[in-house]
Image 1 (cartoon, helix red, strand yellow):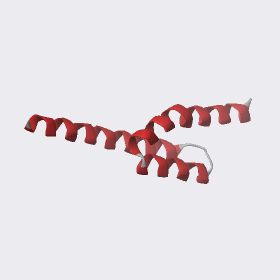
Image 2 (image 1 turned 180 degrees about the horizontal axis):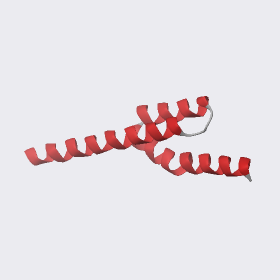
Image 3 (image 1 turned 30 degrees about the horizontal axis):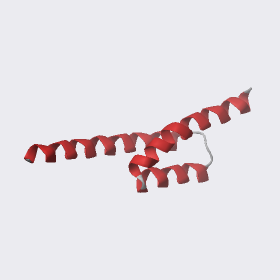
Image 4 (image 1 turned 30 degrees about the vertical axis):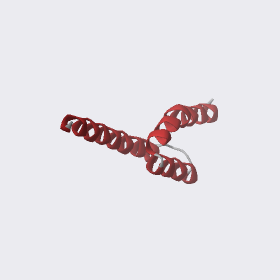
Length: 71
């Protein structure tokens, strides 16, 4: 039964590392400050759902906005 504890701790550490990476990516993006703050709040306060939503909508939307401005 103690091995289950190690699995949950490992998953929590992985989730925390992915969150930190996502926050770093959000801060480094060229989006407006209010959008960055909204994504960071979503990722921090609703970790798993926030990461999934950011993964689907965040980077793609950022890249599409940059492409439309350049093109």
